[in-house]
Image (cartoon, rainbow, N blue to C red):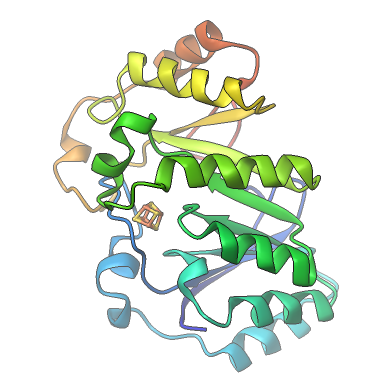
Length: 238
Ligand code: SF4
């Protein structure tokens, strides 16, 4: 595993769990709002965390942490992700896998081999805009995210389906369209995440007007009771 970062403690990234977050190098998307730009574009500029260091850290946190968030970058690009997940389980921790859903077979295989405890699933855009928004031409992307969501529902895997929202990238009509796509596959809950105006891949975005928390709450109210809003502190405010 090419690990390029470790947050030792989080209460918000794995709902209901005290967790750490480990970040994997590289990504096959180029989402303009990505706030892990260095990890995506130039992962080798980030200090490496070896697997030995990571697992020694975990062994020393047995009484303090419940779980691990595996994030990135895109973790499913790491060839040894299945063994890594398995080892986390062997040490007695649960894990939540964050994915951009571009590699559904990797996710399905990990679940068959070791059992995924939770999935963080990015639903980026309506189908017609998906490729453009994420900067990846794979025509299956929009279908793949829905395959993973259905797989999670069919297998009882806890999931967090979320969308980072910036007004320039997703209009209220886009959000309505996305809601319709999720409704069609009976997604029980969808979270609109506030855009984080830090250093992102498209450095113009933080300078452009976006939705306020109030705007997002109003949109969520209009869409339906399955939609909630997460603010910049990672807290659900609706
Ligand atoms: S937001 Fe996620 S999927 Fe998009 S570029 Fe960043 S790491 Fe990749």
